[in-house]
Image (cartoon, rainbow, N blue to C red; front, side, top):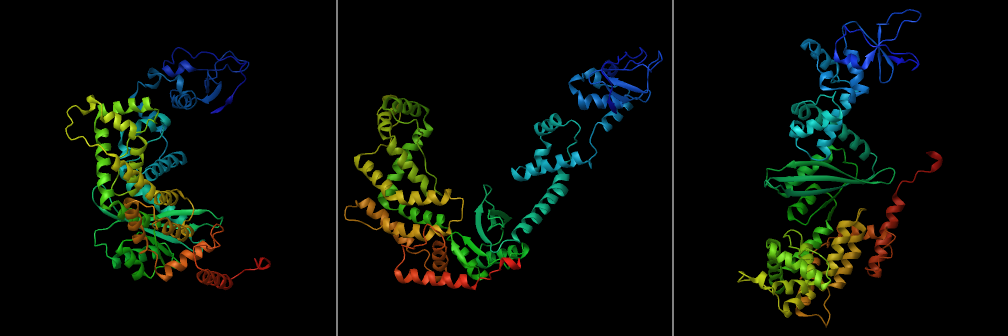
Length: 487
């Protein structure tokens, strides 16, 4: 292909013997000084580009039109009478599998599968194949087996090498270990690494998610964690293990000799779940849950609720039904009930809603009062849970001061109602069982002392405070300091 000539030169139509449809878009220049056509090069009528023409072969012409002026292609133009010529055209108009463009698209498809957790079968879906064909007609999508056996494993190995190169620069690494069950009731263990990069970025990487078919004993979990530490070359990173409060995880930390910190969000969940089992609160939650479930199932009740909300000037909020694994969903359910109580009561009194509902649940004044007390008593736990869930930076320095504040908030006062007293007592009793080991307290108090927000350690006694400062000072003095002049 050659550059375009001056647009002043006239493009002559091709001789009538050239009958292929593609010639509609091409012509020839005249040879200079002669009254003859220069048939060595065809000239594109759209952009005036000269394209080498080998007599009888229109592949170059067809490729140019498809690449730069695809809108000019028509079904008639695309067809070739000669089947052999059509096969040649198709071959030449497809990227070779090893071309840079094809490899780049294949890598992007692999990244899409990995990042969005898509099944390998997505490459066989008609819609996905149509999308790629539309975006780049010359790209041939590899088979599913090619992705499973070659592309994704290569992507994993490349990514793993990058992660290891990044983590090797870290001074210390923390790992979190989560045991969970899939929808198909299969058990998995996920290990995630957290560290500060050289440029002070907080980074996290999932190192492993593996199916666990054996018993989840502490010894077995410790063995799995030790393999991860060895595989990812973390032995010299002073690894700290963060897990939930499960006994097997605590045992795993002991077996593996890992410094161990229990997840504070899980600790808050356990203490709050204990409060939800207080008899009076449990009965109240059952009643509110039945009302919320009724509105979710009844389109009539839901319609009238919206009408009552509008009449009473209340926000158009749907009622919430709690989820057993998240205690704060029970809090949200009761809080939303109290917000919408006038509209709920008005709706439940409607004859149209009560029609055919013999066992419709309603709350009396005592229930409403108990609901208000429950929200009031649980509010500090809700705030702490929200803070820990939304925080994007390391949270270990928050644990000790928040825990101390919760102890204070959950201490009963003379004016507490029986409901509030029972909730506070349940939570405080559970919190008192957590973070009692000297090793754990040292980690938490040191982290708080190094956080400018809590460095005064107001939640500790004077003696405890001085002990923490002494430990921090000794640790700082033992650190190797490299003078700038030797760097």
